[in-house]
Image 1 (cartoon, rainbow, N blue to C red):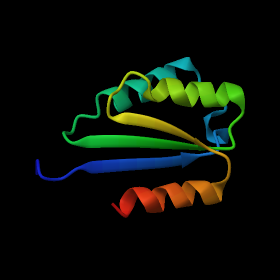
Image 2: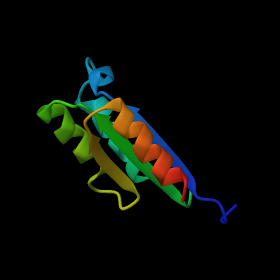
Image 3: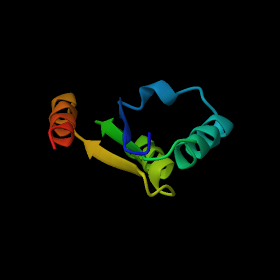
Image 4: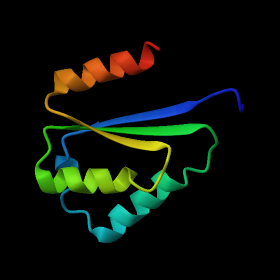
Length: 88
């Protein structure tokens, strides 16, 4: 099992976080920071986010060495990044 690297790639436009409070954000951040599995990488691709939403997505990833936020302008860019990432 230690030979596997678990990759979780999330693509979001940020709109799905409306209506969720700070406690939801903190629970999600805690799950990203301590996923409970070894060899785990989390990649969050934000597509066309407003500045305030982009900041929240960056904050989700900032305290975990295995979590990375990537800002992309368009959905096609996100697909391109995913293809590059998994072609290695």
